Length: 316
Image (tube, rainbow, N blue to C red; front, top):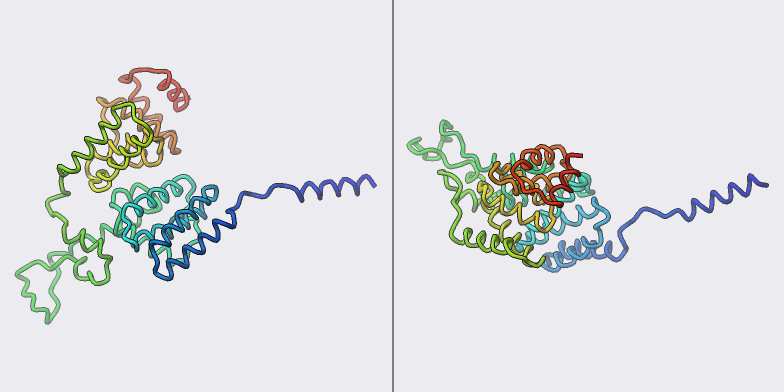
């Protein structure tokens, strides 16, 4: 009798055991609706619906990554370049923290379509900073390389060899995304374009917002301005460090770490920036790199309770 009662109790406990968190049916229905809107060609409506759907999936990283992937495609087709960039940043963050994009349940067609647009819209340096997207950086570089000057012209083309052949990317321009064609056509063989006066102005405004006792919305505005310049000029160390500091100020650790990595470690004459980089790396899951950078910054850094607290956290 006692044994039977014990088995009954265990059965009841198993029956009431809480199940893992799942996406609420409301947000699942929004995801389905957004996909249907996309299939109908209503890309703006699809983007609006999917943005809300993704909000309900924050506790399910792989499901969220699938939703963000579809949202990015809808924003791309709706010509929402800024929205596409924001969605990619969110996708990169869940990938860095949970490998969620790598493990997302996406059809090969959806994954291929998204990665084609990432190649078209995202700078090589940004793609290369995220392991899951490094093959896309290689693909983008391969597409932008000119063909060999020694390549022989085909028969019947009328090319006498007096001029070098056209870049390979132009030869297949009918099959490439428009954004890639535009970037290839405007590429400067002498090197990346310098920061424009408008870029400098945005950076100055961002620094002004960071340099005062700003509200959170002002700090976010500074980050938006700084990252816009940083993404347009991945070769600019100054722009990367400003975007990284702006991201640090609003605790966007993964973004701050990414921009710091792209710009490289600040010099010893910038101990505060070194400290920001160390904290960002630590908070985004790279404690070893954080410790190495923090050790280099501490001798030149003004010690405060905040700095000391992080020093104990990072160095142990």
